[in-house]
Length: 277
Image (cartoon, rainbow, N blue to C red; front, top):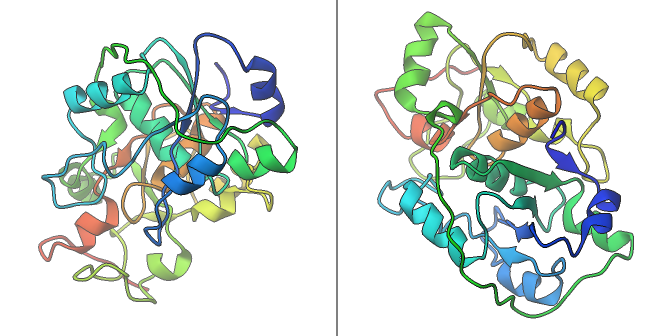
């Protein structure tokens, strides 16, 4: 697999393959429920991966990674094994599906892609959708956790001095520079000192698909990132950081970790340094 994304055309040609598993991983910033939309229109045989439910509920932070056992039980109930060809998509185009892509990879799924353009592009092309709830048969998912794909606050803090990796933030420029208040109560404005800014929206075309390799390379170069050196992605809550990781994988960098707690954790702690401006 050389591309972490799959086109609508390529996916349509593979519908019906026994090991193909389609996953709606929609999540909305305004907290609307994605399930009613799923029932009205989902890709054939697609199941719903609830990013907030398949998470560590004890952390106090949004959609943090669960234990391998919790993840395996949840996705096994969706009829997904680590050997399947898993294609994640979302109802907005290319947003939360990347978080599911990263999560499945972190727990050992070997063949995971994201549908480029998501449900909007699929429907705009008149491709088939189904209504109602799916009824998958439970299978066993054998998890293999990959800690190298996950960063935490301790490593990010140490990196401020060590500069062992480049930390790039997928939030908007205004949030990155600390020019606007954060939406979550108690979370300071600003950024991790020494970090770079690559707003996730800048990685996408107007139709919700991801830019090609040439366009992505130019964007990362403009942001000041060295694409040969180690990179870690962060954002507001570990969601759109995965879009950056997805874009870097498209450039051959499959080794990019996501800081799971991201700014919700960092900005919510008074003992961690913040830069503004």
